[in-house]
Length: 114
Length: 112
Image (tube, helix red, strand yellow):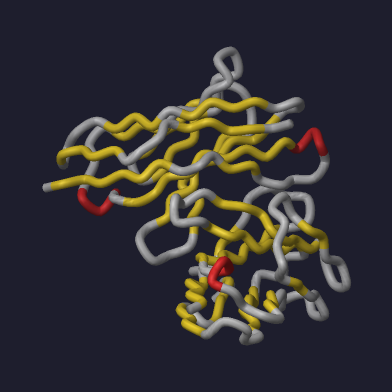
């Protein structure tokens, strides 16, 4: 079945540091890939997405590139801020299976300190 | 403004009580979902619905039940709450043939 593996946290960075959160996936079809973010006390928000190989999703300074050859969708940001402290979830939707359900990774908690 | 709402945001109750967690969306979405989020932050799909009068169980077995009488409303009910039901519950919705899901703010349930 489909699965998503993302790096375990927590991750603690100083403000303005470079961020990478690794995400790899297993899917039988042609998945769309997502990063969701959950700020403290809130629900999940879509951060960015990519629907086909080599697509780059970007939003709020975050980027991730859909790499079919390495089955990866790593999240990056060049300079993190304290306000980026949150839990980040990588997810896939295997549209080839017809269900459009999301399969989530276990989440990575990021803390950014001043 | 199109949005998805959950009430209550926080609930503390005693063992054996019946509770209903409310979820409503004004986006006209057909599909709705309930997730249970454990303290380690992992998400587990417990129920979903394709539309009115449709309900399906998710990947994680749950003692809760759901109903879908109106498109915009997808309540979750626990007939007899237990401490093991203590968790964060997240509701989400999406268009029928579309994979992006929109989430509500969640209900944090504590059963004493």
